[in-house]
Amino acid sequence: MKPLPLEDFKAVVRNTPLFSIDFLLLDPHNRVLLGRRKNGPAAGCLLPPGGRIFKNEPMKDAIRRISRSELGFEITLAELSFLGLVEVMYPDNVFDEAGFGTHYISAGFSVPYAENSPPLTDPQHSEFVFLSITDAMNHPEVHNFSKAFLAALHRDTKPSAGLLEY
Image 1 (cartoon, one colour):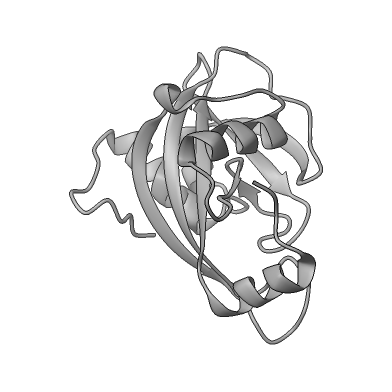
Image 2 (cartoon, one colour; image 1 turned 90 degrees about the vertical axis):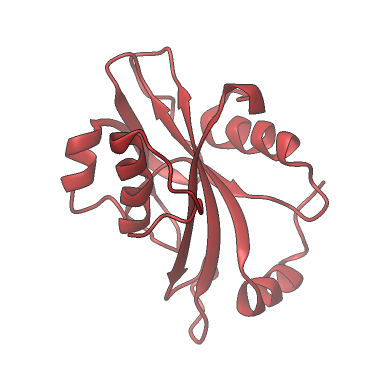
């Protein structure tokens, strides 16, 4: 699987929702890993690492590809616990072009992370930080859609429909 050519991807972002995976990594102290986004949408916000699934890419392969790209190591489907789905509509887009936003449906998963220090930054993030779930829920730079996943972690219950509100 490979990404679409730029103009094709712009057309997709302009006209359809994207489906993505977000990883809520929990360290041994039950802190969640968040990364500060460098580019839009949501540039400057703290979000869980993640990324979009490509057309015809099996989810298990997407999980490995996205975790390797965003974190520098592979996560497997077997390590994940489903938290729910969040729908988010950003007013901006990765292309920094006026006239259209970005619509995501994101599947959130929790995953244990054995390390006590965050991974190195990647091209998408200027920094990674660990925050307690409570601190992350109250942090003004943590995006609201991420707080829906954090609330699911905090409650340790999943809604029957799987769609989380924020």
